[in-house]
Length: 449
Image (cartoon, rainbow, N blue to C red; front, side, top):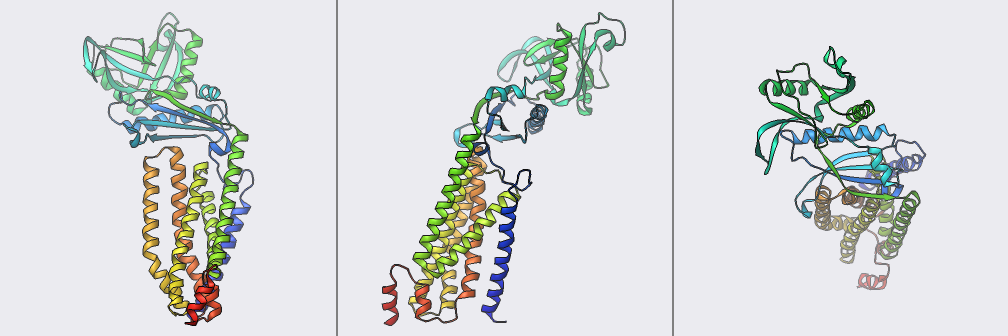
């Protein structure tokens, strides 16, 4: 099999695979399909809440406390029936100043910010602190309460009982809340009570002292009791909140944004139209200016679009307005790579090289510039994704995948197709088909000379 015949066979395989990609892209758009494009809140409508997590009071495993926070909020969101929510941790951009831990909550379909905040509910922060007889300096502040590290993150469950039943004897039947810690929390609670006999162990809820019992002895079994001046109804609410959201660290709402479904749909259609118009204009320019290579570049661009959309569906990547912008920009980068290749190829044709040889040398000479340009863009996308906010990350992710895919389509697909079509030599007809569409007269005169 000759070299050109092999390239023709390879081109047929690429076209068949592209047809399968097109089938996958077009057949997975129905409601409920697992590969349907997942739209961000700015395109689908919904509410985004950003909370600041205060980890200054966490001693030890800060990341573990943040992971527990995410799990608690996720349970709260699921409890109130919000469809396909997103709850994730992120760090604020280092460019904006001191970094801080944040919690991002996305609630698709919820457009009332107040309702969204209410849906999360009032989630109490539970802490146990030792009370010192004299004020002490802790973290730059004077206080009598010393953190023990025992917080709501170790809470397994809570239940409402009455003082007689909770103590296993007689009592005044006042409502009390019994806390059951997990294995790690139970060991920590036993250690704290064993090492601090005779000292008050203050129980804080949302920063307020609700009980200050004196430790009489080590308490094994991982169980503690909160008693206070609350009614049975208040006790029941406290148990519910603790069971579904005892926060290991305090959070503060710092940002909220809401997009209506109609506005999101308009933004999506505008982005879609911009993508199609941009693709069509670029394709027309490439065909008019580079003729046959331009047509091949357009086919390669179609394959690039299919691969990118398939990746967005399969991974999946949440598509936002900024992501569409990144996709459009990566189309331009794919075209830029083809322009570099075709310009080098034309130079070789003018020098009298055969069509196949001109294509081979053109790709070889253009590769360093294409490689460096794409590598620079990939590094930029990684940096933007690393330090950017969720909006910037949406752009960086789609742009990064688009750059990698455009490199494949320009260097691999375009090359295979050109080598399959071009003859070894090629006379004036092939020179015309591969020349500049608006200056063929100059190329033809150079050919005669």
